[in-house]
Length: 195
Image (cartoon, rainbow, N blue to C red; front, side, top):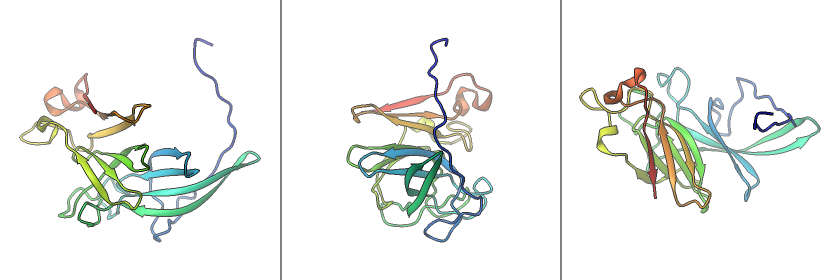
């Protein structure tokens, strides 16, 4: 079949749009999923919230247990974990705020169980503990930061993130070219590889 892999749908699930998480907030839009084989749970990363960063929302991730029952996925929300900075202050998904901002997009699970999360706002890449507290921030080169008409275009930061199979390298890609590379009309975008 032209060298493409084929797949058969094995099971499905539905989340109502009004579903609330364990903090009592709306579940939120999903940016990324990762299966944690050691914990036997699905990690679900929310986006910055409704209204494209204009409605208050604390970015978070969810821990979900799942099992296949016939053709349905039986999902159980185990815990919602809000993200906080290294000082313990809550991140905000708002575009305009004095609080630390986070627009989580990509998610990778490190071998030590911590989470790597790409941020569209910075752009940057955070390492979070399973408690949601930031442990480390990887800043890109200075020319990625928005300043004087250069750097990342609004809402076009680090969208994608993955770890190498050995867990030693982290790759992230911008959603679109930097302003100096043509912005949304540019033809080439940039990626960074960290050791």
